Length: 299
Image 1 (cartoon, rainbow, N blue to C red):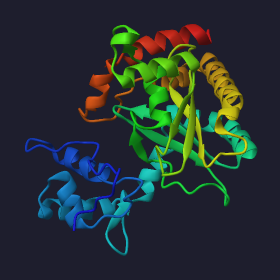
Image 2 (image 1 turned 120 degrees about the vertical axis):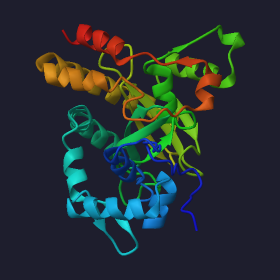
Image 3 (image 1 turned 90 degrees about the vertical axis):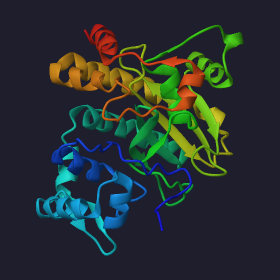
């Protein structure tokens, strides 16, 4: 039976064609895993990548022997070498380390799920999550891929990140109108975007002062205080994090390059597009534009 779940994107991040190299095929196998499906049998890996089972079997053997995959009770899962390599992603690691103190402060105030995310194409990827025993249960964790158009985190990044809305407000589709409001107010509120009964609030992190590189958010059953009352705290946390990242960029050329590279919303993805983005009238800008703005703000 195919492994599917409502709202779960089972597409690998990389596409395989008949002319792909063996390296590309191995990378496609690794990219078939997700935060929801951490362990997959050989047959499911074959289905997701489109590779023949004998090829998958041969590649799995090599990846397992080298520590990039581990064998579990029901299949295979990402190995320790992948975890260690992931820690060396300078931009993401810098962002995560800078955000954790502010996320902890927000969690202390709300007791609810506090999330950090960046945009990758038509999706957002959760980098960090802080929660407690009394927090609302979310089937979201670091590494989860979420819709950019149907979540508060994603809409914040679409509205405040690299890109521009075309046309006048009165002529725009509903999504574009909503994104304009989010850009003006510097926050987004969404209900039941991650789980039924959950309310989410998100704000942009923009060290350059104009384009958000990430979004920080709160998700939970927030009634007392109402989630709207937490907007000042959330926006303050996002602003302080933005200032910290700008200072880091000013002190280190390597950090500056790694941080502004996060502005490229298509990094690391295959040529995947979301029809809703076209309907919304969005045009993605390059990381180079964001680099100039961040460098200017940091210097």
